[in-house]
Image (cartoon, rainbow, N blue to C red; front, side, top):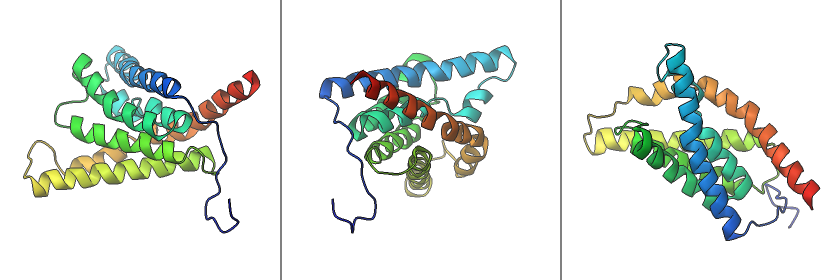
Length: 190
């Protein structure tokens, strides 16, 4: 690496295709299971799906797999997580499914591309969050103005950010700890 590089990278071992595939499958399973826990708690407390909407539990395993396993695993898990969840539980709703798939695919891809960049994990998460939200917003704008879609509204862009602020903060708090824990366990096993 030259000293003129803007962002320095740290070489983490490249995962095998098998390890990336297993990580992707685990992230998809997490993207299905973790939201169900939040929805069950919401139902138990009479809140319905509000906890899931507020804490964005599907985002956690997608960002985590991108940060740990790289862009291919992150993008694939982000694309298939919402799709499998919809097939098994009907959530997210059909109107938002393509936007969630695109947003989470970008989350996983961006987090994976930042995997080896020497930045604090919270900064990587923030960059991935911004990238995913920008792409989701652009897709919603294209659907509304370009395709004349009436199944989704422009207000959903701002509502999702406002409603999900607790989840955004949760991601900033949990993901750096989870990445540190997994990387430390991996380092100690060597």
